[in-house]
Length: 135
Image (cartoon, rainbow, N blue to C red; front, side, top):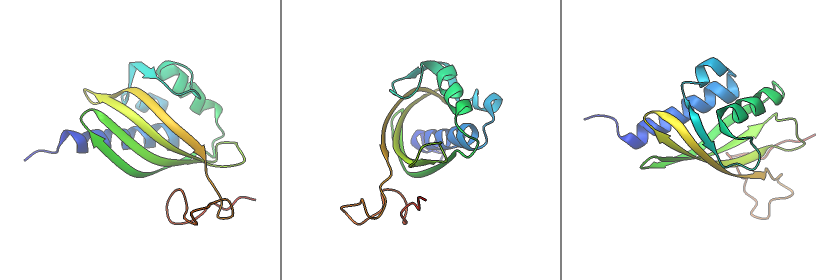
């Protein structure tokens, strides 16, 4: 029995994010993002070039950590943390990606600043098991 489409799509998204955000291998990342990529994020210029140019502009300290991931049909949602982005706080993002024929073709996101323990009304971290340590 073969791997499900959902499992394949999750693996594609995770490998694509690792290739672009952490390895910054733009040539390799081109095989994960469609040349006709549709961008819905308010933080990112249109198309694949807009995304790649944004990553090129972020300090080399950028780190992406995936957390919970879910997939249904051609959609994958990854809850992750962007740290080292040149801002005072990390971003926690829910990235929603549409995958078609093994490539990322469309993207939406919901982003918020990561709360410290003092800021968290729930007393639980927004991502992972520990709170961020800001200086």
